Length: 207
Image (cartoon, rainbow, N blue to C red; front, side, top):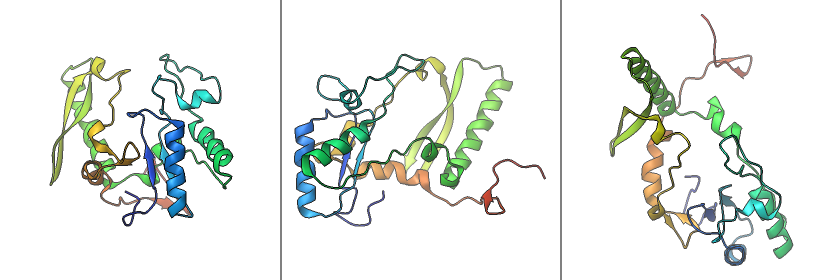
């Protein structure tokens, strides 16, 4: 979504639904550097090779979270060092983490409207005595975009993974197809009214 024209950065995008190979990655980077003096590469922390070994495991021992899942962090730094050592170029890795996911300054109007709708539906379900279920979004259409809130068994969600659709991965595992844009662009529509005070955002206040 950040691209302004064909051939714009990010030039390479890697997701965990395809096996990661260091030599193929090196070949991709070499080709990108041949045509561009500035290359942005986006990766998921969950990248793993064909044997199931996470890329971050090549650098350090990986800790486990409370669910027993490996805590995937450090892949960017691992590949930063790999590219620097292989090509002798200036490299910088930036991890977009909690701030990106949680900042209210990045919320779209759609985010806010749908979060309010989810909370409302959850309250209604609780008042009806419904338990062991959670609110989920069911997309009804893309053009125009529409969705409805439903409840699903919490066991179908808790400690489960929803994978990125493999059919949306293209470019021999280095890019994302237009179908992703069709899915994602409706979710970032609208600029909400943000209350500010002394140049700072105010998220919770009383009148």
